[in-house]
Image 1 (tube, rainbow, N blue to C red):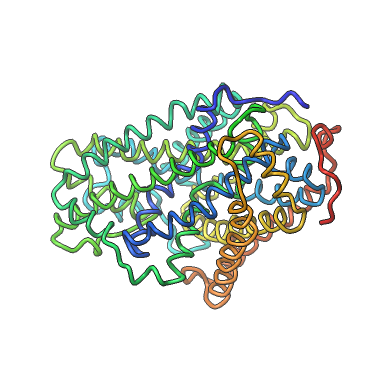
Image 2 (tube, rainbow, N blue to C red; image 1 turned 45 degrees about the horizontal axis):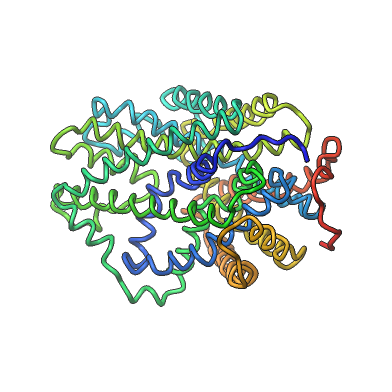
Length: 504
């Protein structure tokens, strides 16, 4: 067994796994998804999806990393040499995500500073797109680098790569022990203030009011599975890599339940905070809540500054808290995303951690400059959509089908997880992974492909969607396959128990 870095404590691992799962999407995506898909009624399919896909997949990825002691490509190659490319595919998905996710964190960092004097003024939309981003007139025009974004982006990469350079115990674990509790405390203060604002009750009523008719819609169930899947860092290669640093005696199933429910708990907290604030804004503007509902970049950088402007007292203080929360949520996720390819490069090429951080992180940081350009937002929008829908979702589907049906590894993983866990995995776990998850992800994939062939995403021109959407999604698969042909440095693959040969 190779001398592998390890987490210092179980709490350190759980905080890191939860920190990876809890990201920007929890704050700006979940509330909108829940609202659009039945409000309070959405929580039933959401909980069902968590228990039948989210936690079973987390257990599976924890077990793969813990049993085979490697990054995603190494662990999958130890299961079967022909499965290695799936690990590289997932690592490359994470690499692409890190190039633009870092830019959004840079925006949040800028807005933390802007909060001190409410620099965005009254017209928050104009400030974001014209004054701050200097957004190009149309997609495809890159223009120059926006200095407003460049400076905070450099800070984000210095912090991230500095943490990763320090390693698992002294870097990632220590950072998450500081960042995640701080994030939760800051966000709790925001939520407590938000629920005491005038109009908050109306906002919460809109958020929680169940629309039971929607429960029968397949679209709602797919949305629930999609939210669970994208928010838990599954199929990013993250959880396999993180679990590989666990000590031999680690309760995998329990850790998966804690991580899954911590992530969902934070999403619920975010929904309460966001809709309380939206209810307040609606009352201030004399409109109904549905008129101010937003999600994504618009919610964070246009609507929330408006809400902060309307706060009766301490506007700057709550502005700083909100955008600092976004920054911390982003950083904990970015650190985990980058660790996947740093670990992969280190093991595949037999280089030091320092060289891996400098090369992998350096290339990602340079590519992130494209998203810091004047046309970066359009680029980010398309790349994010395609890498999520035709990267993560498809990679997750392929991973689970190969593990369950091709190499038939579920029994080995179940046995391994049960040997170290208090909660025993039974037939439900295998049914979820071999039947329910492939069916749901398969349907999502077919539906996505059909929708995107019928019409271009967001009405963008065909060349733009093809080049930065389809080509990027296909390139990560092609490069992943090519990387799998290169021999591992030394005898890396043989350094742990390999299963007997199985046909792929």
